[in-house]
Length: 506
Image (cartoon, rainbow, N blue to C red; front, side):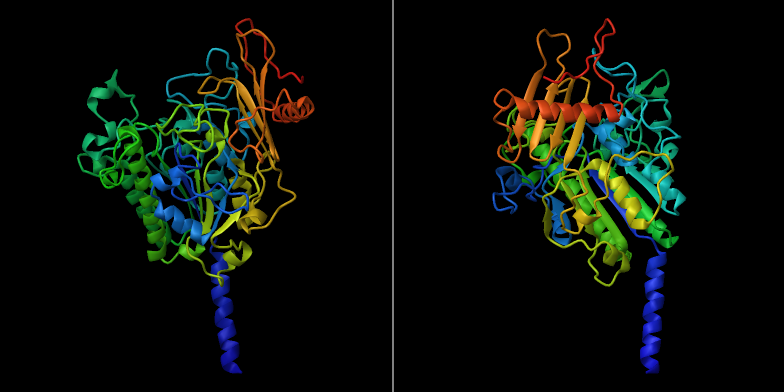
């Protein structure tokens, strides 16, 4: 009897020790990675099972498969179609219409475009922004930024991740891409790129120790991430790692470790595929480090892309880079907004109290929609931390969906507002259940706005525009779209004479 009591007491002590140690959180974000840029199938067949397509056989991502085997992948997960809006949404839980950064941030100034709104938030995040790392830091977390930031232009507060709540920054600056991925080239950090005595060209800070070596940028960032993880574990602090790779953004430069695995589709496509495999190795190396340090059971990983694929395969509006989906990065089609998403504990342990609180079924698929805004409230709910009073969050807690269940309280809607030029220009895209509408403001052109209306369930590859065939549904969708735009205080395209192009219900 005494032995039983002692055993129970020891078990209670272990349980309390686990409970006192908040779970570690890793957001593993890949630049320009669409849902088809992987060997892991995310799209489903008519029976709701993952279906492989040719691009799944072109790429090699065994560690993504490893993570998917341990957790749940979403077949329908949405991001903004370009990077800075998504990154600000992950940090704040707000939709781009609310935080106001509705296109990518140019390092040197306001890139609103000819008809973009004058007052859009091109300065990005600030010291006063309510951000995930700032809230987690206040809750006792070591907050670690590794890789691409792109939160603000040169000279702004958001240009430095330390200003938005991170304790550590390696690699993060105003730039959205490096000049080079090669250590032999100092990742593009050279005196020849100075102007008026200042470095202005895509430098990646904090990696000087790798200059002149054969260390690919993805590998250097991974080594740094694993070192910072080890330091946090040694200090016995829970950590939040924002692992934001520059890969697989252009310039497409072959990763020498993997380029031999790819032939065909052109040199640039081969180079990008090797970069994807290098990114995948980074994921595996971080998983191995968590296991080595004995903290994998207590670490929750979210893997996702920041926008659709930018693979140099096919044209921007066709079924090429994201095939069978239509479109690519910066377009209004699913190829621009549909991204991979996997959530998993780094090592399964049914006895871990945090995994008991959030039991993620291994090798499972969630069909209900999730969005990038959802990470913020999900993480705060899991660790039991209250948000800052007055902070409006547009995302919803994913906990029920992560458990593999349906959640009637989680809205199956997604609004992407893009009043700027890109591959698709000056549009609002709105999803509601099986339906999707695209409202084209086409500033500077004559005639009524162009509309696209798709039934995503029946036509997932967006071949059949139903706008003229189903005017009542079109009207209903635009009404709902307009209502959300107004509630989130959207800014709209503007003509040179100051006229604002508000959406009109047909």
